[in-house]
Length: 321
Image: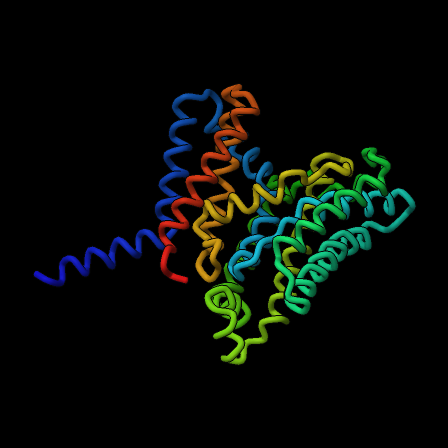
């Protein structure tokens, strides 16, 4: 008799700490749009949704790693803009395609490394550091491009964003590869376990021999590199680089991560939840657009969803830290 309440509590806890609630929310949202909006649940539109979320989804992986550390990264949108216009201008001057790809990812990684060093070596708040790099990066993108869109470089550079392999968009393939790699790292490697340990209790992790500073810098560098990769896909989709690319991406990535169940307090979360959160945002935006709902309402509804997710996160994690 006394085991039933405990069994029920444990079962409820496992459900709450799994991806089931957000997955149910995604399925319900899909069913609503499928029954109320013509042309929503078609192969072509499903492919469109995945292509639309590829940029957000890749950047959200980096944001997940950072938030698991109990940090925050507001710089990924500006990395997308700055790395894009820099490499597009260099490509116009004849920079080889393969070197352009390396450069755009490296620029993101270097900015991320700068963030990590400022946060973990100089003990600065991640919010302040990445807010500063967001502002500087956005400004430099406008200065370098003179506020103009850059186009006319070798179209081969657009392959990752607009090309296909065996009929499947390359951007979707990259999206899945990034998530599978992140899932493997977090679940099966010491690096992934240490990220959870630092997010759970950085001081305890340090006393246990975890190199907190090194891992923190590595995580921010990875987040920056993934933002650079997202920039490359963005360029491919647009066929150009624009200094306003990535505006709002930082908030959307945080939204996807939190909606997916990763705690803003750090140490709790799954990359699978982030993937579902990204899809939920993509389905919501796509469905509202097909239903011809004003973009103003899109932002309002998305904001309410984020607010609800933060409330749930705070309720679940109250008292854990």
